[in-house]
Image 1 (cartoon, rainbow, N blue to C red):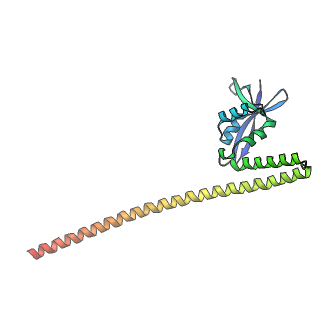
Image 2: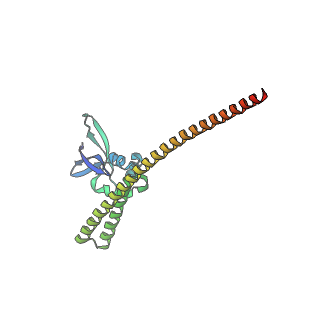
Image 3: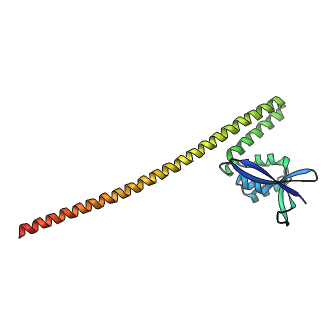
Length: 197
């Protein structure tokens, strides 16, 4: 039986609880909460993980907070990077997409450097520094996008308000024109009546 504890992580301002545990000296992570965090289909990801020989996806029994036993799909921690790399970034939540792409690009760089024999401590430190800068840039873009969306909502509200005012003004002007036309018509009839009598 796998005893799990919740690990909280923050992504794009949202806090997620990811169950992690250890069984026979191997650290495991629950797959479903990560799928929910990314916004990808859990069943498709499990099928992919089970069909690929390079992943050790398994079901383990754990005890829930209610004291009942549950079967949970888990993946060894050291395979999470490979799994995240295999996910199509176009299919994840929009707010998480930049971070997944950033992670995938960083992983490509590390693999390339490792295979070429150029993965030195200095290069690792430089990659970590670049990662901080990239994370800062992604945060700026995310904040800017949020501000743009807020401005767009404000502008839409202003346009709606102006549209309502224009409709009211148009109705008022139309009713004024009808009233004026009616008065003019009454004046003409009254004038004809006087001329006839």
